[in-house]
Image (tube, rainbow over all chains, first blue to last red; front, top):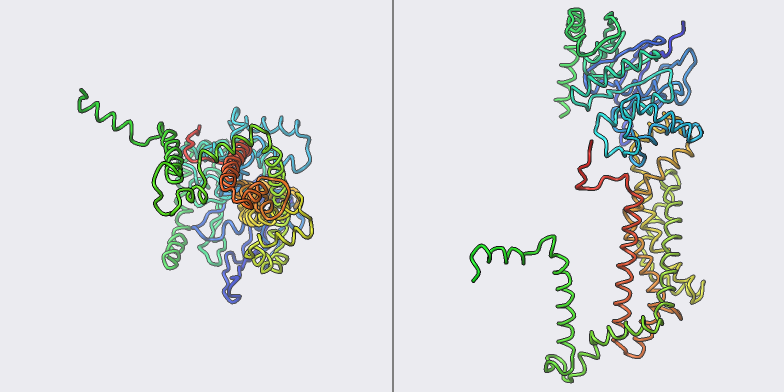
Length: 269
Length: 283
């Protein structure tokens, strides 16, 4: 079976605009394969190039070397089979919640009344009925993330790219969102790359966890299959012995890299 | 007799606060006109500076006569024709300047090469005192409405242009990337992302640009025309009728305030999506 997404030997080197000799290699020689319907988390210390990797998968960034294949086809330009959930605020502030959700449908030329019907349905699914005409600044951080999620999922992408989507939320909201994400995902099993720096989040959501080394020149240093049973409840599963065992093993592999990344940031600061 | 606490509350009532600020504003206006009257009336005070008691009135006018003049204008209906002309000039200059500003602002912001070629010329044109173009516009467009509109357009254009340029350049890269991932074509990005973002900057400068359109219209009329409030002022100045000059200024000021209120109203209606400070509604 062809994988949904395969990144092969990806290297991303950024050149400083002021000084062409100043280079920064964010990702070096990284290979990452996501099977169809697989939920893969990528964890690593801050500043290790996780987002760079995701941008490459989305086609927003062209790698310096290496190739990207989507369902066996070489990726040129934007990845049209992928939906992207950004870490930062990505909603259009001048559109209300409903108009934000149906933006993608509108871009595809769907008739407005059909789009509105589907948009309202999606707002209901993410628990935001009655908030259709609120503007992003009138919604809380968690609600804005739900709108983003609906905005991405309404287009039914085969691949879902998520860049620390819940990192700005408080712990309770976050666990709620994680459970909702799992529920939505289990309905039609999209292929997911989920970027996070939170190991617990990564383990409780995924089928597989990939650990990246500290940057510059980050590369995968470990891969762990998460064989926890589904359906899962993210707050309960954290208490099971198997979870704790997996957490211990992955953390052991990560610890050194986290310390390295921390030391690097200290030096830069 | 007043007790101490009553006295306290009496003075507290007089202290400027949100409720009586309107009264203080009116008081300042009344004081201003009273002072003006006292200093210019030929009979009220002995002349302080001038040797002739009528000279102060000659140079500075007299408020009661200014009001009488303004009243006459409205009573006879003579002013409406002139106000109408000034209004039309202002609105046309504003609309055309804004349109050009948006179009060229978006073009230069999205095309780095065009932007770097035209950069020095834009800066130069902006630095130039553009009022000086008035005589050229009179030559080109005659003494009618067109030359005033052209003058206003040169003033409005740059304000809008720089704001749109900034607005398009400062579109959040994440919102932009999100739009692309949601499948927007370059045209759709322009219409649904760049334009709304730029419009918020245009609205931020709306008060400024309407004000400058008005300046262009009035200065144009003042320099050469047969209609408009600027023309009335120019005529009165020619015969040393200082009261009429001040009446014209008074009418223009009130008119400008009304225009500004209108802009504010439109802004509130169209910019509902922008957070206002002090808004606490969150659910």
